[in-house]
Image 1 (spheres, rainbow, N blue to C red):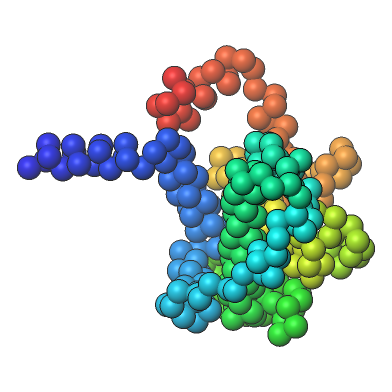
Image 2 (cartoon, rainbow, N blue to C red):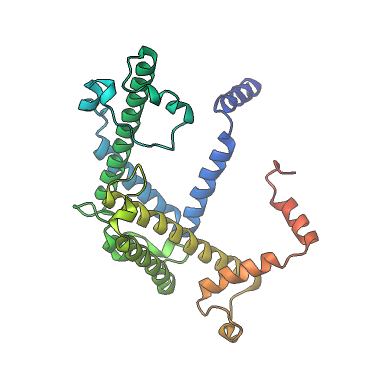
Length: 288
């Protein structure tokens, strides 16, 4: 019985295509990293909120396709195509035929334009659903702007701070909230014309929100990593008794920043032999 099950599992893994294992490991690593930082119960509560918001926003019904824009029904020679460097070069092969009565060229152009509008509609739908989920979770305001209050206070009130790695420490919370506030200030200070230079992001509010979100996710990862590094150093070397003045040597006073710097220095100071030996015990079996 075991052998057929194993064969089916191998077939399923092969059918998943190349890169499946890497994607699976990345997802598991992120899941365990988040649990390490925020605690299992807090993470389960978060995912329950996300799934509930997704259900409300998507409604379990397929979105009706939007009507084609007027440009699709006009004569081909009246099209004004945008420069779109993200698409394969062969899409541009017959642009010089626009305005001419070449049936093959017109057909290829029509197919390109249909693909372009489908791509744009799909992207609009994805961003719209994501914005809806953010509103349901109070991450965005009713007007669609970033709700900074959520990151500064509301989110923390919903967490069981005692189950987090460092959330019960005011110093760690202040570090993360400060980073998030800096991300917000940076995003709102970017001129609209700078935000909309990307060929796909012409909505300044959406681009501003995405700029904040990327910055906020990086800040959260950095702060969680610093908390993990601090815990790791305490596990290995014990708690800092406070007798050493680290600032005297140009090191950070904040214990989490100090842990990040200390970990980096210790890793960079390993000898080639130490790196070789440690890489063996850290291997997943695919890099040996």
